[in-house]
Length: 162
Image 1: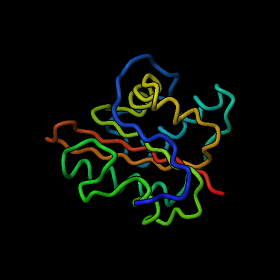
Image 2: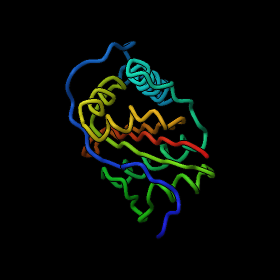
Image 3: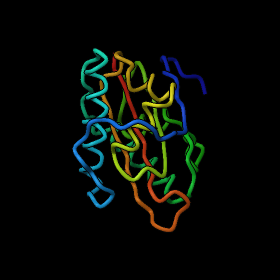
Image 4: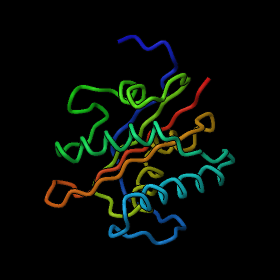
């Protein structure tokens, strides 16, 4: 598939490490509050680095949540969906059109928003996505699936429009 727009680096994986200042959010928190906390912590990192805060986007949230559910349902962690879909496919299908850049971070196993943002911030590629000041919108996906390999699954989808 030929993509006529700039596609920001898409990376997978996560490694936990240093703590971020955070409002405690446990795995018992609801999905909406976990997604909001990821956005808050991500924006705190961006502001500290001199980037503007990201705004939540409904279509990117739909794409991220759908991909996260797919990863949980099929017990995998990857940027390619179980149906072969890419970030571009999912974003456009969710209604995120007119974009100039897209990026995605995925992770699994972290039980709190702070843990997953810490993991991404300690991975060079994921950190680059978070601190890419040209990205303007964000959508976050979060699913818990007890009994699965990882238990929790996360996606951050980032975008910018022309």
